[in-house]
Length: 194
Image 1 (cartoon, helix red, strand yellow):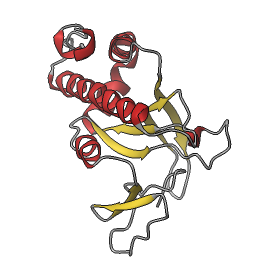
Image 2 (tube, helix red, strand yellow):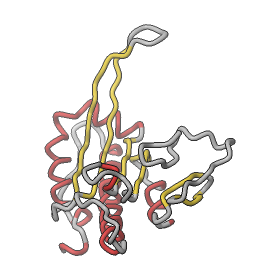
Image 3 (tube, one colour):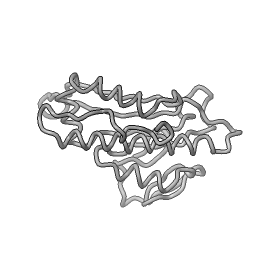
Image 4 (tube, one colour):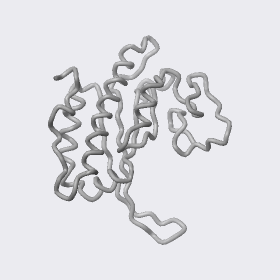
């Protein structure tokens, strides 16, 4: 299974032979965009509160206005954080918004935490469900003239911020009812802004 950038996703059957396209390389048995650093992939796959769904370096061959031209990271909260955000959404959403403002102050990144509630009727009885996606997208699309320096910096900053957000999510899921932690403090300050 691949995402809309052609990257292998969690549903990928590891027993199948993986074929890389021209813009991809093999990483841990998965096809990933060629210019994604191993250290980025390692960090994103080691998050305690989020699962990596997709990462895309942005593709110059996409239409100029296409979202596929923009680098992006898509994550899904792990079970404990999903449960906390689902049960305490209205109590926590302003604090998460404040964390986003603090972690991504430059305005070069679009950060979306999307909560979808629904009822699904498939083969069995209808059941309520929730899905939460965290989407981090670079505002600047890739062009044929990019040397990668800007985007390497963007990925490094985005992954640093996600690591801080992961720490926050993990910290929050460790608290008892009514103790959701502070979104201020040094662990949420980017080193460039300290």
